[in-house]
Length: 353
Image: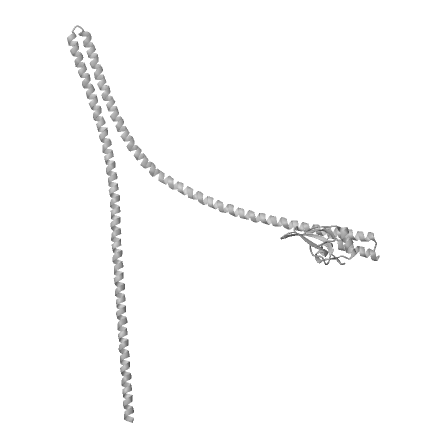
């Protein structure tokens, strides 16, 4: 029975994981095995290999034949070197101590090489990571510059808009000041009217007080005259009612004047609104009339174009008819000439005969 040291596949699709096994050469790949020597995982960098060193050396000494991949794995782990040295000891080339010494020196060199390879791989990883960081930094800096440019442009636009607003604001302020001045003048005029009313009221009150004082003096001097005092009192009452009527009439006149002013203002506003509406309607009517005129012009141009196209078609038809007539005349002339030639040929033949 020939035995083989080979790999038995496990794991999943795209990520294989192998068992290093000793099996009969005639058995299937995943079939019955004799012994499992270790595992091999190629998914890591570097690949991880776990092997039973003594058992593998024993099977190699017994004559088990490894596959190509299994041979490379055993050579990497020093199994092939150990077997070679043990064969030398068996032949008497050197003793076991020398073989052990040589194996240790070989293993130390091998481990150094593996360590250097791992360090190189780590360095490559670090360098690639640094390059990625540099690339990311450059991209971020470019983005930051672009954002800064956009922000600066937006800032300039905002400043320009603010300057434009500042230039427009004085005009608005001037208009508002004019409006406020007009309103203030109106308020001052109303205040003056109110003050005049108050002065008239105070004057009427002074007149009433003076009349009351005079009446009091008269009553003190003429207490004995009962009838005359009653008449005086009635006269005073009449004077008071007259003054009150005068004050009321003045107030009514002022109220009427204020109402008339308000009515006049509203009337002027309505007139202005009506004028603006009439102007808008006139502009609309002008626009509509212009549109109608333009439509008429377009229709006239379209009709002229149709007439021109019809005239051109008629002229083309007449030219075609003339050409056809000329062609017919030419064909008739050719037929006549051919007949004349035939007649002349027949006459010549008859003469010759």
